[in-house]
Structure formats: structure tokens, C-alpha cells
Amino acid sequence: MEVVKEDNLPSNASFLPSLESMTAFKSLRSTECFAFGDKKSCTLDGQDYMKKELSKMEEKLPGQVDIFKTNMNKAMKDILGRFKEVRFFTGEFMD
Image (cartoon, rainbow, N blue to C red; front, side):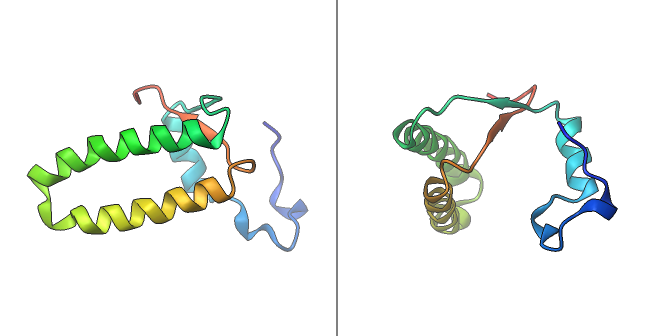
């Protein structure tokens, strides 16, 4: 990974993550994964994730289910719209 010094940042560098978020990211021991060769496999994985989370939410937070569905659908549309630009990572304790 290339480290960019703050004084060499372009003027439109607002897209760069903060130091705090990068520290948290590194503490998760995240590594890039190449699990999705195409949009279809990414969509299927997203649907599986939604099913797992919805079953948990329905028993613990039933009032949040509709909000989760709406936000998750928006997030998936965004990810799929930028699929070739997005990198996926997995942490040490993530399935």
C-alpha cells in the first residue's frame, strides 16, 4: 500500500478516509478478497446477507426491519452501480 503524505494530497482529496477510520480498518486485520467475479455473485451474496440479518432483526428489532430493507436496497444499488470501482475486504473474524 502506498502512503500519501498530507502535503502532497490533491485538492479534491475529500474522498480519502480519515486516519481514525484507517486505524480501525487495520485493527480488524482486513484483507482484500476477490470473491465476486461479477455483479450476479455480488447480488446473491447481498441477498444471503439480507436474509440472515432480517431473521435476526425480526426477533430483536422488529420496528427496524423496513428501514433496514430500504437502506440495504439503496446500498446494494450503489455498490452494483460502481461494481468495477469497488474493492471488497474481509476481516479476520468475518464470515
